[in-house]
Image 1 (cartoon, rainbow, N blue to C red):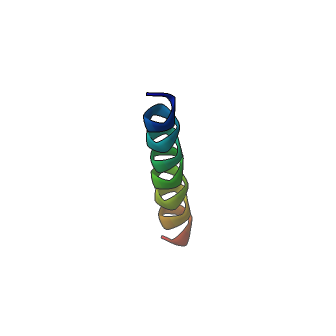
Image 2: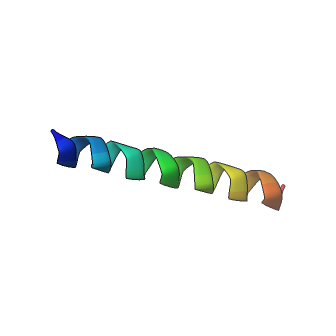
Length: 26
């Protein structure tokens, strides 16, 4: 369970980071 939560947290953080980078690029 902990590994799943950590995995989801990392994916969510990576998605937010990529979204912010894309917005800055535009």
